[in-house]
Image 1: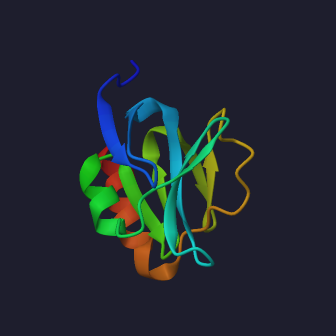
Image 2 (image 1 turned 60 degrees about the horizontal axis):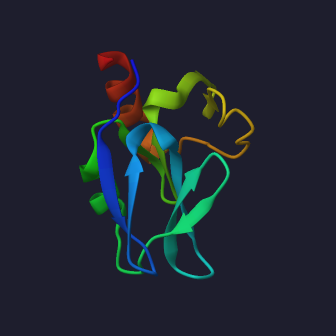
Image 3 (image 1 turned 60 degrees about the vertical axis):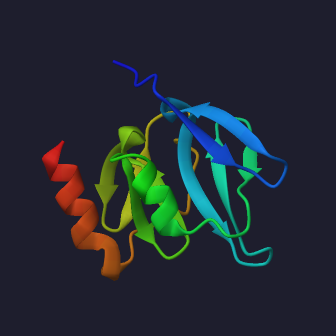
Length: 113
């Protein structure tokens, strides 16, 4: 069933409570040097000093796939080649590619499920 546990994220404005199942993935914006959390209808900037390690530690289902992206593997439908195909509502995400450095860790996590 759906995971209803919550995470409190630190945004540039303060704190926001999100359910794990609202989160599709996280993306690093190089220009602004922020991680963002990607929800179905919204993109929220996390505070500047948030690191990939901080995000991955929040939940076992958050897995880093490359330097700029961390996916919620609850929404991972398939991996074709290096591309992550996501379940709705995140099935429009185009650019979720697993880099070589992260491929084994993604595979490990995926096969454990």
